[in-house]
Amino acid sequence: MAQNVYSLNIVGYVNVPIKSGFNLVANPLDNGTNTLNDLFPTAGFGDTVYAFTGGAFSSATYFGSWSPNMSLLPGGGVFYAAGTAFTNTFVGNVLTGNLTNPIPAGFSIKSSQAPVSDTLENLLMPANFGDTVYYFRSGAYVSSTFFGSWSPDLSPAVGESFWIAAGSAESWTRAFNP
Image (tube, rainbow, N blue to C red; front, side):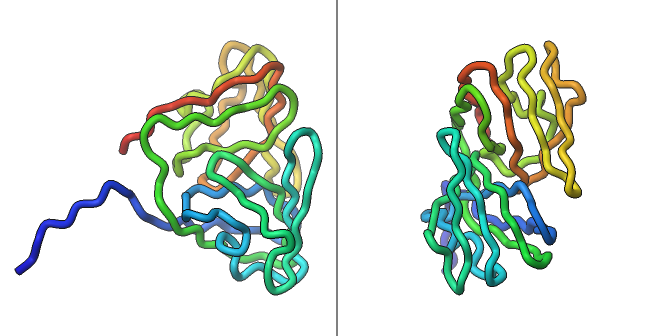
């Protein structure tokens, strides 16, 4: 006899195209460990990720496994240098509830903690006058600056991260309850 089965989690997958060369990539789902070995298990030999934390870069390279095996949490991001193009499939839980993503003053790489693509305004991205977001698309930077509203108000793709130059520390807080 069938029983009703309920889950508190929303589980899914997201296919993110990785181009040859540099990409700003985000982990859109929580897979429990969120390590590079689990997030990018079929990376190309020699592919490298560059994380930017505390004003400095750290890197990891794939030689059959990632060394070091860094973490990439939803809401963060890395530069991914790929030798050849491929599609990466992220699998995990959608973060729900009240989500908070700290944004430090200065430069950082961030992304939406929820796997949605929408304008920065609709994603409730906090900003002060002059704060700027930089996307790396097709080998060039595209920017959006806050002048009371985002101009232009661009939309990050699911699985895409971006640089933010923030004049002061902020908390990117939003409720996500699909």
